[in-house]
Image (cartoon, rainbow, N blue to C red; front, side, top):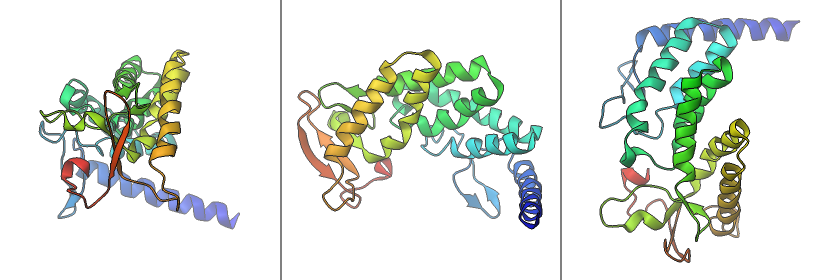
Length: 226
């Protein structure tokens, strides 16, 4: 009974605090805080950032727990803002799971919204389309104009694979699961070192699939490689 009372007390504190957070930061997609408020990454030059689904994912968890409409409305607003990313070819990369599994995926799970399902499947189709058949890896970023990134894969993509598994579950189409499994299997073989640690980025010949070399944090690591 004591544990239940403690849990209920903590849940009430979370609910009250997050209601204030939402009211103070409504209509924003945050990355960090500035002077006690979230910043906003929903502008055209920031909308494709890889963390832009995180806050909405937390909001859907809060809505699921408390049924508070403001959590749902804020999450829906972020999902709609991300349409600018979904329709930006150069902004679509390996991190679609971070954005649409946590927004449209969560939305569909809770509300069965067909609009959310459509967004989810568009994102899953784009991620599946990044699969390099020769390398058995999902390509990371898009081309910067010189073709250098055509043979880049990143270990972070492992956390985006649930988007593909869920797409197969929703559509009964096994190709999404097949792509995710093929990528995970090759990633296990080329990313993981003997001591159990992992390379950050692997480069491969996009025409043959042959492994070229790893690129790790600190080697000319730019914001693009985060």
